[in-house]
Image (cartoon, rainbow, N blue to C red; front, top):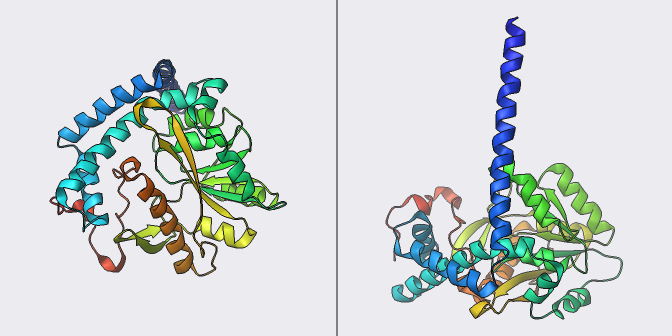
Amino acid sequence: MVGRILNSSSQYRDAVYESKTLSRAAILRGILRTLALLPLPVAHGLGAMVGQLVAWLPTELRRVTDTNLALCFPEMPSAQRRRLATASLREMGKQLLETGIVWYCGEKRLQRLVVNPDSLDRIASHWPPGRGLLLAGPHLGNWELVSLYVNRRFRVHNLYRPPRQRDLEPLLVEVRERTGARSLPATPNGIRTLYRALKEGGLVGILPDQEPKDSGHFAPFFAMQAKTMTLLCQMASRTGAPVLFTFMERLPWGRGFRLHVVPAPAGIDDPDAAVATAALNKGVEQCVRMAPHQYQWSYKRFRQQPDGKPNPYKTRHASA
């Protein structure tokens, strides 16, 4: 009797959790589909207002943004850094409001969002016959749009880190795969599948500027040392796949996006992790300097520091 009661209680809790999961995902899906109806200039205008509000208030996003800019640009005058921080948060607001458009717009509208379709030809020109190709897409501009757009011509196998809210993972996979791309979690099986795709001459996309939880190597990034992933460099070294950096620059006044394709610096496929990760971060830095206000400066990129140095985000008053 007790066993039946406990089993019934467990089933009830599972049913309640599943109901909440479906409700939250359904609400988010509905919001995004509604936002997809907005003209892009309107979404960007509203988003800029949201970002400006975040910039005005003493929020955690503003604090982390200010800290990162002080760490990465110590030579920059403080007034210029403040302007860059505000611009960055305004761009973050634009990205928030444009997400529904990027994820749910129709094929013709998706095609019109990008003003330089010849960028796909440039990707093809760097893709040797019979070999795979690696796309390194930093958190710059609208990184979600890169895969969706490139996949219109080339099937992309994307590596992703599962979200903390596990119930939202199916929704994220659904929207990211809607144009035919494949999303693979950062698990041993997912990584093996990516290696297989490269060896078969496929296209693999990785976000290269997330701080790895476990393995990684400290390498210079702007004026700091950043714990950097080694997976992308290892893939390039073991498969001979060239690496291209890509990002979608958001154009002003809602005029769309420009896909940038930047060949990786030499050494990114070096067997020496120190050489390879330094080249990886150099490539990210080159892209960021092309549109610094559109980088995700609100991400805690330097939480882990070498040689026992303190976490800079725990210091309440970062230098301005």
